[in-house]
Length: 134
Image 1 (cartoon, helix red, strand yellow):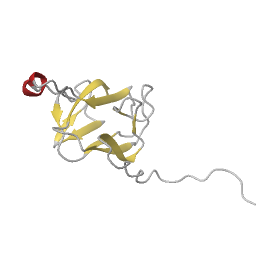
Image 2 (spheres, rainbow, N blue to C red):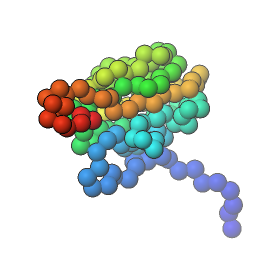
Image 3 (cartoon, rainbow, N blue to C red):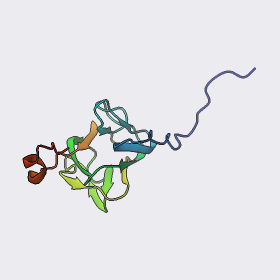
Image 4 (cartoon, rainbow, N blue to C red):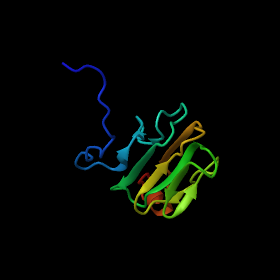
């Protein structure tokens, strides 16, 4: 009988439940926290080396995200959104999301990581009608 560890690749995640709305990790070591924000691996502790993940916005009206916390190794560890690169302390601020959000770290320095959340969207017409914009 063999004993020990079996290492498996971190493949695609489960699909979201029916009717889900928010950020969703499609693959990799990132996760969605208890209030629906996407966080880097091991957040709020430093992420690891050679890590990557992909995140999508599902069923969100005007999906926009903002970094509540963002500290990565500048010029080496990146978040990509709509062709824009975010690194160092320059995280996304009210960044519209079209397509996949990707994250990757290199083989060297690891930092505290990041937490990105759905940004509040101002909608004066909806507020006048008594509807809360999310």
